[in-house]
Image 1: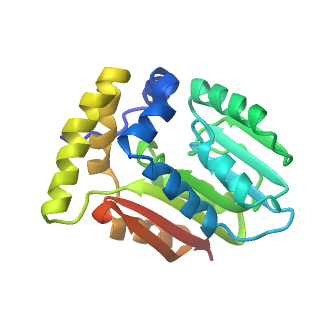
Image 2: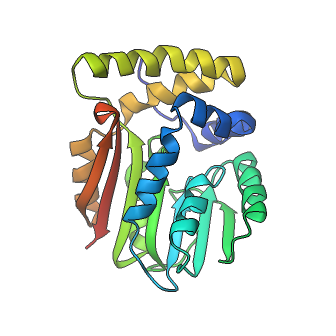
Length: 236
């Protein structure tokens, strides 16, 4: 079954419900691979003394905190999300981290960023773009807030390549994951999250959408037999 995000309000409400167990289930369901992927994303962010970094769909702030640790030279860190419960957890984690850089966490849609033009050296979104209703609009917003030559990093799930391992992953993703998610959290949410991949861009479609928006894809990495990809694009 394929599901598209129906409305931003419904998506926000879903993430509000799963927020208390979100970090725990991320570690459990990915066998802690999510931590490795975040580190790879942080490694692709350019070195920029006094740079500015934006993490959209920041959730509980894991990506933002990872980037802050890898790039202490950045002078400003901003995280946005549509879920107030997720941001509340992010604020607690930032407060406990002892970060020296200024951090702003704001309730904000990726489709309509209330942020200045050409402000950020780097923007990222991890496992969030497929939950945006108007994805092309979000890409335009990322382009708008980046400086010329700024870097956009997208970490996301895709339908994996064919083969035995891909089939096994699909079984896990669509059967085991919702079952475990249902035990510890919200079963319907963990049914939707894998199903939403079917309505997302293919890798080639994402590359084309980025190019049409004014980006050039300049690198990336593939994990889990192509089921998870990290895409690095630069604002032309």
